[in-house]
Image 1 (tube, rainbow, N blue to C red):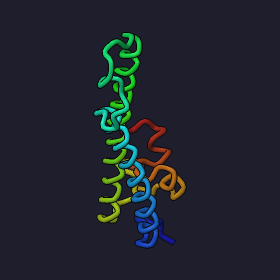
Image 2 (image 1 turned 60 degrees about the vertical axis):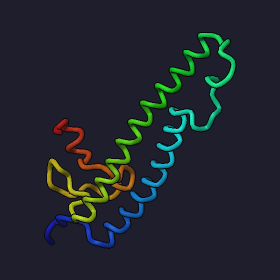
Image 3 (image 1 turned 135 degrees about the vertical axis):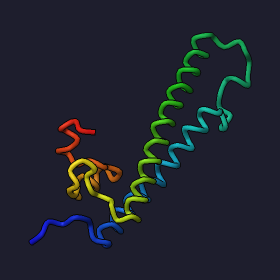
Length: 126
């Protein structure tokens, strides 16, 4: 029996559902981070008395910087998930970009935007 070169449409549908679910959650988390950065929730000390200690202001700045970094990571995750959806549409989803072989389903269920098999990832080839 010949080795499979791509996942069947039914399998791709399963992965599409997983990705859409993760994408929805990731977008919600991104919006929460963005709101924290821009102070859209209004629960910051910047609009109250300016007599707060410098340390508290520093903690607020650090928190916003951290939220900014997390938001950047979240946006990259969203973009990777969107790219995975495009690969599903192109029927190239789940194919290792290094070896050309199918990435195991277990890996794709855990990391649905993966483009490398574990072997390729561990070999350090990019």
